[in-house]
Length: 267
Image 1 (cartoon, rainbow, N blue to C red):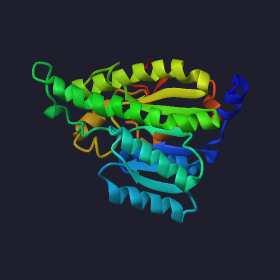
Image 2: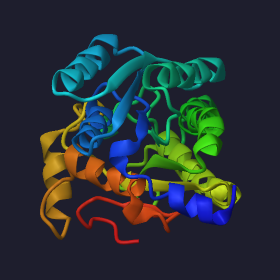
Image 3: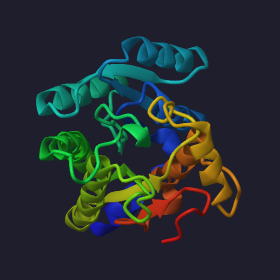
Image 4: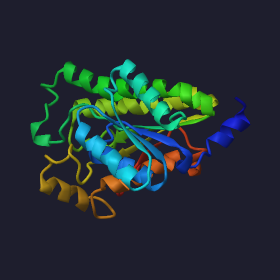
């Protein structure tokens, strides 16, 4: 593959892409799926436990003239990830061109129930590393044969603003997302010659997803008051930023971390 070819294929319009969203059945993942549907992409909706929600979302997209496939796979299981990419190719007759690493190992954003620094175990950190970093690693590696076939690829990893602004010290979650940022940048460097761009979009608390449903209203209000734009980011606002990194408009952008939180953190 020549550099010129990589440049051309990196400008693939979203409407011609197959986009895989991990953890795509509910919450932020579902918002991302819907955002890409609005842009005309074919969707692979990955889920682990949320079968009903995933299939209902896929059916709703197909009912509106879109293309969508719900696929069960635990992203920490590489064989399951490979089977998911095979199922996507069989359904759409072309490789996945963009992956959104959104899947989250079981976690509830409730600061009142977090483990403090003097009590958290390494096992808690390890569980988040396995899901966040290990899951992203499996999905990126599973995508690479298709990326090489089409001469380009787009990876968007979902991060957090908590490692810049640890207002609530979710030690395990934040450490795993910080590691994912490092992986984002080292993979961007390593995979760039293959025409693959790797970026991260990081937010704070979103109003509202299943993961943030345990968050007290006063916490949302305090965050909103601390932002220049005066409100808490919605899943739809966050999803819009993710689509940018799959679009031709971002074809010269890789290794970056875009913070989308209404200006709470400026980095």
